[in-house]
Image (tube, rainbow, N blue to C red):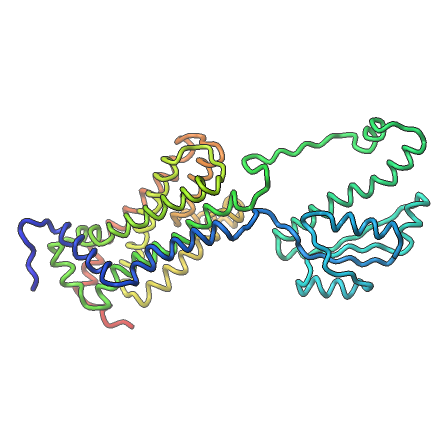
Length: 395
């Protein structure tokens, strides 16, 4: 049995032992450094220019006149669109939309030019694929904008011919002037509000998996006795000394990610780097606490890997980034508070969009600290499970 030097504390012994284990296996380098760096690169580049452009749409022109061709050229000039097909049949265009070869199409009816010139009601219909919510919203908004402008054209021409000046035309065509001021994201850039939280959602999965694997590998490979002997049979010392190197590495990766997102990509934020990094550090420690708690409930690595993968995946949905959590089904909404990433997103939305102060985030900060309590309370159960060797032979 291995003896611990009197000049070295049990915590230092566990820490040195874990550092030796980390540097002896390339696996840890891959999951702790290479994978987070890949996630940073992936999230920094996935949204491209930040806006949807050149979405494929089609036109069904039943009129085949100069006016209909002018409408098509106007639609093609919209940056959101790229007219890729010209159909002669509505059914054909509908089938292409259902198959997602295109995301929408415009129908120009017969006698469209004659109706416009004759002052009769002319209708332009458009259809779009709305199962893809974000794409459908972009298509809908672009069609509404361009067709509203087109619908005013004949009226303006006729009013001008009658001698009415432009200010009078504008007053009866647009009696109420609309001004749009998107707060915090004036360019309507997807990367502004998705890049940062989505990285930490992916990062959460990595932290959970590394945490449970680092502890579970001691049981899986039968080295748990040496581990506990180094810690003087103190479970807190054993877990804290083992996880500290990963905590430091994850925090460095988090600092780097914040620098890339806010320093290099210039994503706007209302606070300094210090609050962002402090909240990130607290999130990492809270996620590790959740990992320790889950592993202590099921201290078999073959079981817990599947469980934490599911928990990490649920965090992506319940974080409230893509759909507001308060408007989810009540049971799901309250369950979202069991995920550290939910509180982390709440804190960071406060910091990024207004920095309204600690009074608005103290509950989420307290919740992240609270994730450490169950992990500490369940450590005796984990020690009992390890010493009993109940889970040692589970494949």
